[in-house]
Every structure is written in C-alpha cells, then in structure tokens.
Length: 102
Image (tube, rainbow, N blue to C red):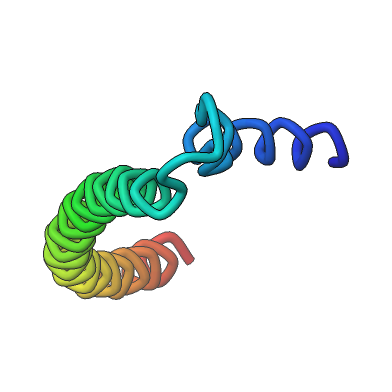
C-alpha cells in the first residue's frame, strides 16, 4: 500500500514539477510561475476532457446494459410462465397415469 502511494506521488510529481525546478536564475519568477501554471492548466484540461469522455462512454454502456438487462428480465418472466404451465401439465399427466395404473 505504501509503495503504491509512493509510486502515485512520483507519478504526480513527474507530471507537475516544482515551478522553480528549471529556473536557471532567480530572474522573472512570476513569468515562470504563470508559464508553469498555464502548462499545469493545460495538462489538467486534457485530463478532464479524457475523464469526461471515459465517463460518457461508461454512462452509455451502462444504459445499453440496463436496456439489455430489461429485455433479459422480460424473457425470463416469459420462460418462468411457460415453465409453470408445463409443470402443471406434467402433474396432470402424472395424476392421470397414476389413476389408470391403479
């Protein structure tokens, strides 16, 4: 668990380095911060768009599976009705056989 969290932290740090990590000298720190901020915002926007696309795909798949599930439930109820009818016919036939054999 701890190693997984460390790997995750390293992954996040690799994507979002410290704003002053590539600064050669302390000149123009606000420009660097705004550039880094823009880069971070672009990365976050791309991730948000990807997340939204995945979420939309999952919602569509869920709707498809729910519709398929509804059809299967309907088929199951039809089969259960048919099964009970056949069981009733079977018991009637068995009682008739029992009556004629005794």
